[in-house]
Image (cartoon, rainbow, N blue to C red):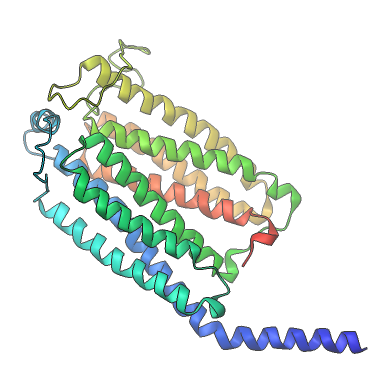
Length: 339
């Protein structure tokens, strides 16, 4: 009886503590979700600005695209910053500044109310450190590094920020619902592999756009009327100012196509397996819809001559698919990982 009363007192204390700290947790969750949306917009806007700057959607397409490709291959001038002056990049800069302010708020709140949140402030601190690194890298890199390296580092940084924010938000959401099932949790390695494949495919897409290799294969399903066209997989970051050969551009584009086929097949199979788990059926169906839509977008972009809206939407859906895999990975996390 004494043990039962002691257990009841502990439980009452937990309920009282939860109700006491609930306003702080709700406020923090809203702040993190708002920052998540802003981070997603920043990544998509970065893609839009990069693609518009490359020449997609211009009046004299594809001549402007090829002209910009040659211009971007020119070696940077030491000590001179290569800034962007288009309205797309200015808008992106404003969103990134707002994102930085939000990241500071998230980090500060997590430290100040860490007892109420029952969550370590490590991830918010890493988020803020990542933003500081990307800001410093952006200031330095535009004068010293070629475009492909800058694009990939910023793309990877944007994805890392979004992933951290989503994970922080999920840990504060009671409805996130970690699945306490050995059968379901056994699929976590497969979900991780799907995340890695999707991430690699997104990076390959950034590699294609940053090297202006989108026009290397304009047909589908064949590339230059062949399944295996002439390709050169060698690549040098020498900043010589010379355009890449058509064989090198074809190799870059072909790798992205091959990666897309592998990713679609694997994620399609994984979606059907996840749908078979009753507690994850909605997530599996949503993921399958995104996969089909993304595959159709990729084909449409090739057949329609790379419209700017289609290319940006292709990037946005890829990020949504990555978000879905993060959510799925969280749901399949061990029960001990719950906050």
